[in-house]
Structure formats: C-alpha cells, structure tokens
Length: 179
Image (tube, rainbow, N blue to C red):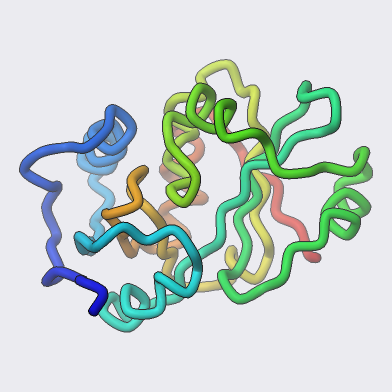
C-alpha cells in the first residue's frame, strides 16, 4: 500500500535536497500557508491519486521542456489528467516544437530529478533561463497541488499565492495559456 502521512502545516524536520529547504524557507518568508504530506516515492500521476485524496486537491503535472538546440527552456504546469501535446503547446506560444529536456539538465537547472519537477525551482533560476508557463485550467483552480522538490513530499497551496506572491518573488512572471 502506498504510504501517505498525516497532513502537516510546518516544514519537515530534515530536508532531502537544497531545493526542498529553499522551498519551505521562501514560503515561510512570504507567509504563504501550506498543507503537506510525506509519501513513498511518487513518480507518476497515478502515484498521486492517494495524495490528492488526502490533501483534497488535484496535483498539477509539471513538465520540463526545451527546444531541439537546448537553448530555450520551459516549465509547463498543466492539469494532472490532461494529455500533453507538444504541437499544441508550441503553436500557442508560437515557438519551435519542444520536447522533454534531458534528466541531467533538469537536475542542474531545476535542482530536482524526474518525478519531482516543481514550480518552486523558479527560486534556483535567478538568470530566468526557464520560462514558467501555466495552463489556464490550473490557474483557475483554487488549490495548487505539487511536489516540494522531492518525490516524497507534496503540498497544497492557494493557486493565487503561487501566481501572485511566490513567482514574482522568484523573479518569474508566468505566461498563462489555453491548450
């Protein structure tokens, strides 16, 4: 059975990554409340079903994308149950076709591994090398469910606080699109 802890409203006692530590530090600094759980390792959206039930929310799907030359990078945040179509994404942004960025770039640029992509990586992207793109379906939700930068920590935060408080603090203004 997949383990999901009780719900906590304080950071973990110990951190599993630099990004996870930074995530909670920034949330506390900005006084952004959150609900979080600790879990067995969750990699796929199917793994998130019990997390969604526990936190009473819908987990977002966060995809790290790049162009063929690996010179343009996008963190696309969409609904967890929505199919990703590269052609549609590229057409809406009027850019060349994108694909999934390599795992090693995800680790070096976002500070996380496959399965833990998160909007909180924006705090590590001080040079704005990654464009944050949010699906309007996600932007319209009251709650934002995501990884805390690990594959064993998940949280629920008000979507408006991600868009209006966290991302501007991290120096990123998201592009909100309909796909």
